[in-house]
Image 1: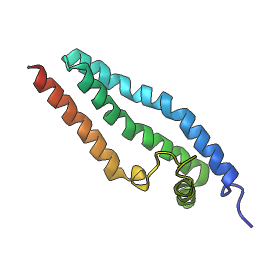
Image 2: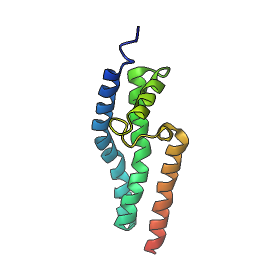
Image 3: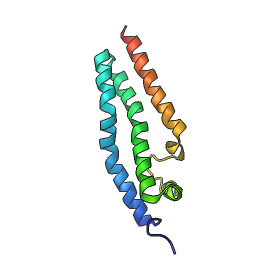
Image 4: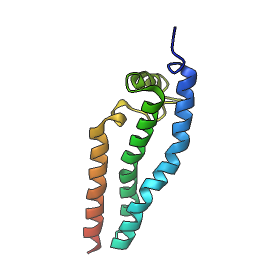
Length: 123
């Protein structure tokens, strides 16, 4: 018998909640970067590029935590396998590398490099 948490109906619910939370989390985590960039005089293109790279790792971490809380650490891989099976619908823009800490750290470090480059271009 399959557990109630480990069925496609629950995976769809988790996915829809994650998509609904993605935009507010993106905004919450991106505005400090934009604010500090504008305070430092970084060009808007560089500031917005950097804020995307800055906010996505935090957003993904929170959403990954939501999946972990909903399914448990031992079963979250079932959800990500399900997303891989539905790449053109629920798994849109999902790739297994997204959940890796190394990928999120690379994005975060890239945002700092964009900030420094934008600041140096201002001079």
